Image (cartoon, rainbow, N blue to C red; front, top):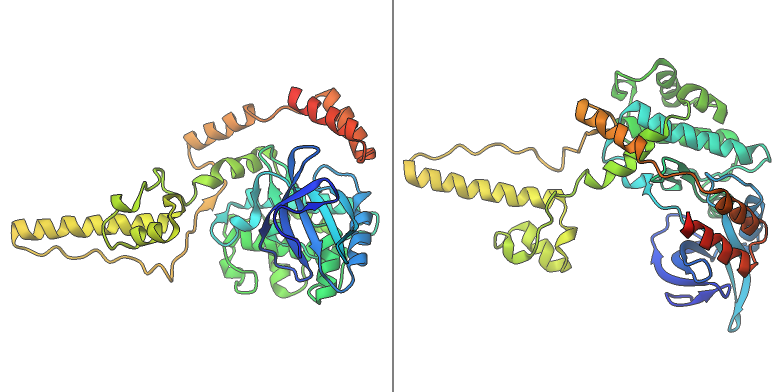
Length: 378
């Protein structure tokens, strides 16, 4: 059994395990000791690991910067066991499943995400390769305003072997992306909503796409998605990454349990975890409500009259309904302009050349070093 610290393929050192929602694989964050960057390692435990490796190698030949690359896939012997593994890039940014269901995106931002993912999956689709397990965790929005799609080849085969997605087709991918779009603009699960839940500011093509999905027909092709949604602006996607960390966490982290009211839920949470940074805005709200109650008691003591308590919404029946990603006033518009001006520069010519050479000859340690040096210099 593999564990953190093990070396895979004489190059990738496992760092920590991750939760994974498809049976048949254990997933690890790992470190590429040659290129000094983080990668994702799937340790294949399904009934037919060789089929997963073959699917990964077929996806490896697809070259598009919006698809996470498969860096290595194979079998190696560990003691008396044979270990099957697939190593792929690990994109940096905000993974979409961290936001889905918690906020409602403005339609233009949701369209930018889903439309870009649809345009990306059209590339392998021309070679007859389809994802088969597209979901929110498959999409990562990078700081440069690009939507990276993960799991091509690997996850579709794993899903088929687990009985989760037996049909891998363009239509299956298009319907999966349409469901992500509906959830993004409403904040609700696609199985639970009706046409009345759709936001009123949806453009007519996007509304027609959503209503087709709710009626059970859905889009037939990925082109139907891009025709209805477009592929969006990279500035809107960069805003997602820039603003996502500020959605729920308090502006000033709570320092310690001693600084919180004794017996409060926030203090108990800090004592349990040993880390004040994990206290969410919900716990911070508990602190504010406790302070308000103390103030009310002081007023009542001074005046002799009780202060009527303010009725608070039931947290079990309410959810955050932020329309995320829109410029709501001049300050927000200025923020978008600053993001556009501060966009990361394109890679240098030297960096691009060595990167292409390294992609073509991935086993060359010297080319790997040259590519990394060019990246640092850029």
